[in-house]
Amino acid sequence: MATVTEPDIIPDEDGANVRPERPVAARNWRWGITVLLIVGAVWSFSGLDASLGDVVRAPGKGWDIVRQMWPPDFRTVYDRGAVGKIFESLYVAWIGTIIGALLSFPLSFLAATNVAPIAVRVPIRQLFNAIRAVPELIVAMLLLTVTGLGPWAGALAIGLHSIGTLGKLSTEVIETSDEGPLEAISAAGGQWVSKMRWGMIPQVLPTVIGYWLFRFEINVRASAVLGLIGAGGIGGELVSQLNFRNFPETGAVLIMVIAMVLIIDTISGFARRRIIAGSGRPSEDDESANLELLRDLGGSSVPR
Image 1 (spheres, rainbow, N blue to C red):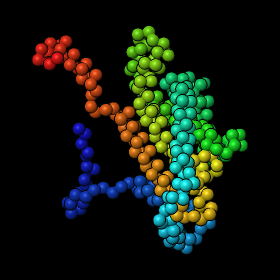
Image 2: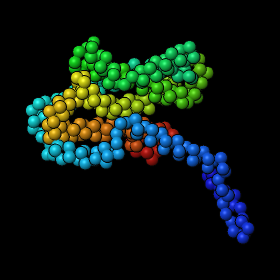
Image 3: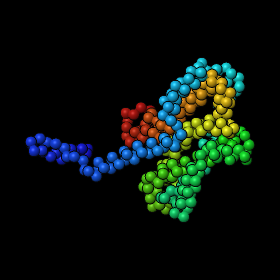
Image 4: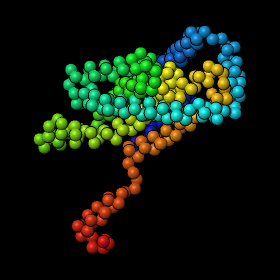
C-alpha cells in the first residue's frame, strides 16, 4: 500500500518545525483563477438584465405560486386525460431511446480509434458532434413541419439526439476495452467480424446497455418538455394549465411528472446495477454445473 509522505519540515530560527510556504507561482495562479471566476460571474449576471431587487424578491414570488398550487386538483386533470398523456411521454421516451440505441451502436464501432481507420472514424465522430450540438427542442420544432403535431415528432427528435450522445459514450467504452481477447482471436485465425462478435461485443455490451437505460431516464424528462411545443406528452397539459393560471391543476400535473420520473429512475437504476455488476446469487443452472464439476474432480461426498 502506498504511503502518503509529509512535505519536508523546515526548522525555523527558534528550532520549531514549520511547513514550507507554497510557491509564489502557485499562489498567483490560485488568486488569478479566483478573480477570473468572480469577474465572469459578475459579467454574466449583468447580461441577465436583472436587478438585485429581482433576485431578492424571487423566492417570495415563487413561494406564492407554490401556495396557490396547494391542494392539487387531481380530479380535473384526470378527467382531462392527464394519465394517458403521462404514458404518452413514456412512449415517446422509449421509442426515442430505441431509435438512438439501434443506430448509435453500430456507428460507435466505426468511430472507435482501435477499430476503424481514421478516414472512417473522423466523419462519424463529427456526425456525433453535429447531432449533439442541436437540442431536442429545436429538432422537434423542425420535425413538426414534416410530421405535424403529435408524439411522433417528439420520438424522432429524442431518437436523433440520442444517437449523438449514445454514440459518443459507446465509442469511449469500445476504445477502453481489453485488447487481450481480440489478440487471442487473431492468433487463432479469426477475422475482423469474429473479433467484434466474440471479443468486443461481450465486453462492451453490459456497459453500453447501462448507458441506454441512463439515456432513457434523461429522455423521460425531455419528453415532458417537448410537449410544450405540441410534440406529444404531458408537457402540453402543463402549458395549457399554466396559460390559464390554473395553479391547482398545474400542481397536480407537476406531481404526476415528478412521480413518473422518480419511478423510472428507480427502476432504471436497479436494472443498470444488475446488468453492469451482475447478480450476486448464482442461478440454479450455475449451482448444478458446479456440483457436476466437483463430482468429476473426485468429490465423492458431494450429494446427488
